[in-house]
Image 1: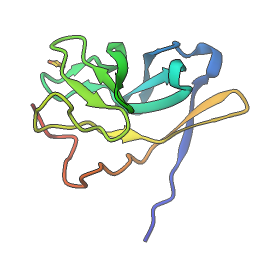
Image 2: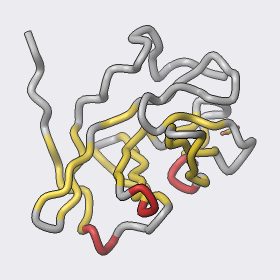
Image 3: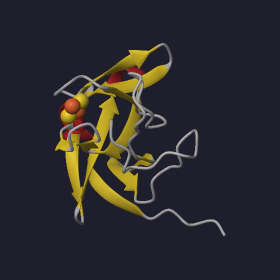
Amino acid sequence: MEQKTKWFAACRVEDAVENGGVSVKYGHDQIALFYFTRRNEWYATQNECPHRKQMALSRGIIGSNGDEPKVACPFHKKTFSLATGECTSGDECSIKTYPVKVENGLVYIGTEPLPHASGTRTMADQC
Ligand code: FES
C-alpha cells in the first residue's frame, strides 16, 4: 500500500539561502534544505554526514557533476547526490533525500524519505 507523503512548511522562499543550504529542525531530526538557484531546483537531505556523524551537510558546497546535483560535506569533502543521496566520491554510504515543493511562497518538505535509486542503501550506512 502506498504511503501518503505528509508535508510541513520549512520556510518562506525569501528566507532560503541562494545556492546554499539551511538546517531545518523537524522533531528530533535535522533536514538540510538546499536552494539550487542556478538550476532553479530545491533539494532536501538528512543533515548528518554519514562519514563522522557531523550535522554539517546544510553548510556544504553545492554544485553539479554533469547533470547530477551534489553537495560536498564541509569537513572531509565527501560528496553526495542531492537527487538520489548516493555517495559520489566512491564510498559505500548514502544519505536520505526528501521531496520538496513550493506553494504560495512557502517551501514544504515531505516527511517520508524518497527511496534511493538503488533501493538497497539506508541512512545508517557509514563511510
Ligand atoms: S564528516 Fe562529512 S566528510 Fe567527514
